[in-house]
Amino acid sequence: MTLNYNKTITDVFSESCQQYPDSTAFSCMGQKLSFRELDQQCEKFAAYLQQHTSLQPGDRIAVQLPNILQYPVVVFGAFRAGLIVVNTNPLYTAHELKHQLQDSGAKALVVLANIAGNAASVIQETSVEQVIVTELADLHPPVKRILLNFAVKYIKKMVPQFSFPNQVSLRDALNKTTKPWHPVELTPGDVAVLQYTGGTTGVAKGAMLTHRNLVANMLQVNEHMKKVLRRNQEVFIAPLPLYHIYAFTIHCMCAFSLGSHNILIPNPRDIKSFIATLRAHQFTWLVGLNTLFNALLRNPDFEKVDFSQLRCTSSGGMALTAETARHWVQVTHSPVHEGYGLTETSPVVAINPPGGIQQGTVGLPMPETDCKVIDEDGNTLANGEAGELCIRGPQVMKGYWQRPEATAEVVDAEGWFQSGDIAVIQEDGYIRIVDRKKDMINVSGFKVFPNEVEDVLAGHPDIIEAAVVGVSDSDGSETVKAFIVTKNKSLTVAQVREYAKTKLTPYKVPHLVEFRTELPKSNVGKVLRRELKD
Image (cartoon, rainbow, N blue to C red; front, side, top):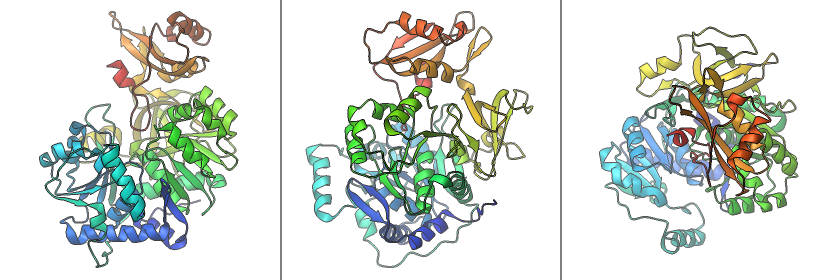
């Protein structure tokens, strides 16, 4: 079928609010927001931006919030005012935040009080003119709001001292104007989001994702997964941060467009509270990634959760190991639909479809998405051969913000985006991601892909997590090194290597093994190999 991408995010938002007014759109910490209530709050925020700030359509607004109810209010309100949202990680250091604010030219910042200290220390070195501060429970009923915010600030002492030159509270902003907002004329080709890449290949760059890009990816996912997506019936668990494009597209676009209920998890690292939330709801979808699944599976209380209504578990962001997939199905009776995407593709490129899961692959490409693999000279390779994966489709970004040269390096004249990932396209069309091109290890001319070694090590009964990197040798080659988190403190390097030898050719077996209590991870839980290598 042909999908209609000629809509804006505000069109999708308004349609859903009109179609499902009394249904719950988002809930967090026991507080619910219906589609109608969200619509009203977004109108208030859009009106404030239009009437009480100097912001004009096309200006950038940075949003530095975790998964709380304020996030959808602020983001959809900003879209209605014609602004470009700059999704900003609450865990950023002051240095990282300053770069993103300076690079994007953001004129406004919405920030949670708990993390406002870093922003306050650099704000005068940026072009931010207006700072809007919110406290954790600002959208809860009065008594609960006052009690929760008091406890966070004065009992738990989780709010640092900070001050901004031009500061207003979100509650004041929402109540400041009595005039209605003025609809802004947007086109599908307008930039909606500046989504910054992790910067692992240099300075972090802002991927320009248009309204068309994000609406297209929403429609692609909904069509691809339609057998397990029911209108106005699904209950999504949202532990991954909405400021990450994977969670944003799934929860704020796909689920929202179908009238689904999204249960926001502010701190998924608090596994005890996370599981308590799971036990309190009859949920039908759970979106996560390998490290999060492992953390849940290691907690004995997880098996007490009622999984009877769980229709789909979605995995992305990093490779899903065979052992994690097996253990997840054993406990939840829900197979994991592993997918693949990138910031630059809004993000979803492929997913294992319902009724057709092939473990070890990332599934089939989205509708109206072309994929190919190329060699180092740019020649297209046959199915079954490993090469760099290239993607072409309506979800591919407009380009990198103010970086035409960097854009030209990854998107050619025909619209093919070079992913930097090594993949194999099977004869049946399923895609298998071998590894990141830049993470490949060269052992005396032999290629070793960390994902393969990590998957083998994860199968060891005493190993909780494993990460593999290449370490330079004196002869210019590389040696395979494994970082291991184990539940058996008596496990030895020799035992790890002996286990690996039973499943890997000799040059792939880790020569060096280092035990760690934990592995460094990104904000979404992806293991940071670069940090281990450095």
